[in-house]
Amino acid sequence: MKRLIFLTMAFSVFIQMGWAQKDVDTYVAVNEVEDPNTFAVIISNEHYKHEAAVPFALNDGAIFKRYLIKTLGVPEQNIKYVADASLNDMNYNLAWLEKIINVKKQQARAIVYYSGHGMPDEDSKKAYLLPVDGYSTEPSSGLSTEVLYKRLGAMPAKQTLVFLDACFSGSKREGDMMKAARGVAIKAKSAPVTGNMVVFSAAQGNETAYPLKSKEHGLFTYFLLDKLQKSGGAVSLGDLSDYVTEKVSETSIVTNDKSQTPTVTAPVGSTDWRKWMMADKAAKKFENMPKFVPTTQTPAAQQGAQQATPAQQRPAQKSFLKRRTTTTNEE
Image (cartoon, rainbow, N blue to C red; front, side):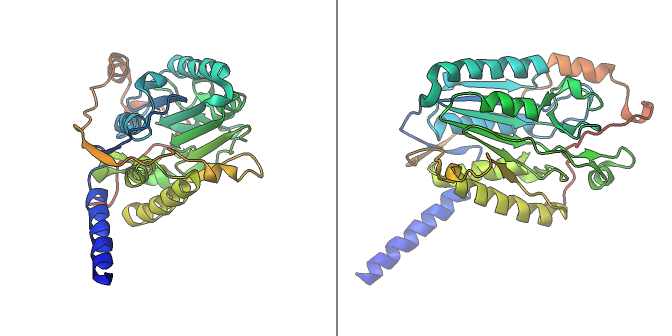
């Protein structure tokens, strides 16, 4: 009997290890339970008109959407996914989410995911999300996280989850990208959070949000997806936060020789969020799916890239954009 129990446990571990090593993009947990009361906005900004591209941002958002549908059971019609979004695109889709939640109220859960550039305002130290047509030197061309959190916090949702694979610290323009990543100019302020809202950020205010080049994802997004895959979606926000923070912190030191520490922001004194579940029931089966192939640059991004003067020919100016660098030591 003991031997049977041992063999069963060993087989279970073997099975878990086997599928855990599968690619998160193509080996996806499929939940049989639908979640019709979750609504999401996903913004993936990769191809910028006036700034460097953000490697793998389109892949980040597309695969996160795949997990919302397949692993968490969110109907596709409940998700707005926007690739290379302008400021108008971002505001329009956030307004759609507000309208839905104002009708559904406490029945609904809202999820906002963003992958792309973040930037600070030199004067106020406030953090901004940068649309693909925005300028890092002009905060008014971006979306303030303070404004975003106020809008989302005012919604009467049961839960509001925000995932930001971006960083908000400024970098000096002199030197190459690695030197720029080391030369931190500004530590952006953390905007307050209210209501039933929790914000997961990829890095602290003075850090860079790096890519995991071998996985073709942002480092933060990869381990977010990794945990959803391993848990079949049935993971608490507390466990998700602990896992992502540990894995991202360890991996960044090893591959980049620099710190990246994900953070969680919740209303002051709130701890109930740690018990919130991404999915109430774990997915029991897995599906092999095709690799996501990002489309080429949007016409607007291509036009902007063609019209932009090469960086080395531009007159010197202050730029406080924190770019996600593609240079790592990872094999």
